[in-house]
Image (tube, rainbow, N blue to C red; front, side, top):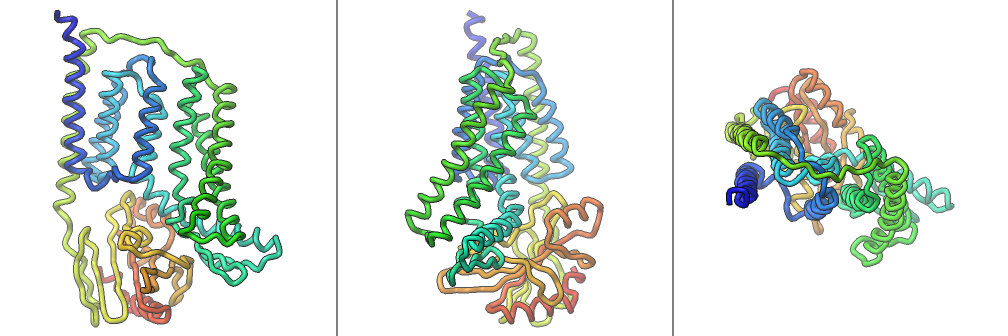
Length: 447
């Protein structure tokens, strides 16, 4: 009788811990994880396929317990939601390895790809790639004899303007491409009963990224050359055809070849856990759950104890207000200035291309420019008939930069905290004047 009841006991223990981790997610990560996004939903489907494809593997040990506990300790000292996200997911993986079976490297990869951090990195760090793609397509069009010029993320082709925007479906296909590649390689590994080592998986993923860049290059060329405008059926059809031809087909061929050539025989032998191992594991789960709870409390305390708003000395003519996340808003009849302090090298920067897009504005003509002798990013914001001109850079009063890696490296070395400065005006001339006034008065030095 007791032997028959043991599986029920193990099952309900897993449910108990999973419900606890779900409660932590709802408490502290409810606004961090976008459960309605296409990437998240595709990621969950991919995770199910990866997990089912890996069935039969032996049960895992306590590696994820140690990783979750270590990440929880790190979250206490670096209380950001990305760290808590990783802590909770590692704890969930520990539950899965204890009660179901050993998790594959692909499962970890899926969790990383669907994380908000990955989406943020793609949105921010893909900007130089967009500018490079614009230049490359312009060069290809010129090679055909056409009159094509690249200006920032705009291609002027025979008098018509085409914008390579971050909202473009092709550029957002990178995470979709990687998730599709993980799904395909998981099914191929199950088909051939072989697995790829981590090194070959990395090479495989790099190939997918290259395929995605080629896909976008060809897609933008086709859209511009044939003057296929956004919002039309052919615009989406062209994107999907390029995705299938330049990403899915090569990935299908590449994954099958790599697994047959470099894959190792999969170990399908099931390993049973004895009573002593189960008892120790239950105690270990309780310890890991406690670590996760402490990490969640640390993140909660940080969010509730925000520093006071920034204070400026040179504010004549501006109306100041402090917004959420300690953002300072300076406003007058000519311009709107946001000063967004950055907590550390690890923090997000409230990037304008994300924040303005969330307010319903579309970015066009994004480019690097020199305004008042300072190199900045500049662009045009459009929303219906409304048009605004905006510029931004990173500044700590002593140094300024437009490069993500630059200010992060400086802050990691212990420099003064940086802030993102975003100035917006009604026209290009007014923007230049406001940027110049802001720089000359040294407003950022009076934080």
